[in-house]
Length: 169
Image (cartoon, rainbow, N blue to C red; front, side, top):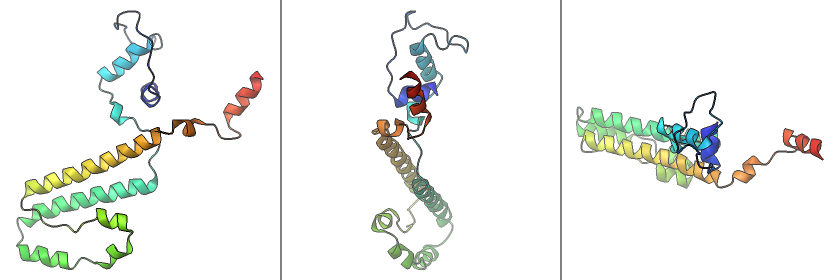
């Protein structure tokens, strides 16, 4: 929670009074937040791994489909070196074209018929590229969500925040 809040809210902690040499343990972790944050980074916690909100179901499904198609492309390219090219072209001709016409234009542009790459190395590069794009899309979605943190943090009517303010009035 501490690391996630530090990243999401871009918190700048006070300078360490002990020259950034504080020993961070469970008992004293709240004494120096700057050293605690630096320890998080030093043990390998990644800023990029912090999620800014949830990913909608449609977005998850789109990414899953994209990654599955990338894996199928890679598997097809591995077997294509063992099969003659004629069998591959027949398989591509049998692909149903009506499914593509019923999907929205944006989805049609991202879905391409799997053409066999000239070598297995090219197929691996293509799969890596597709997976990288899926991850970048996710990261950009998360960045868009973080642009509006005030909207996400506002308490809904009837939540605990309104009761707490009533106590102090």
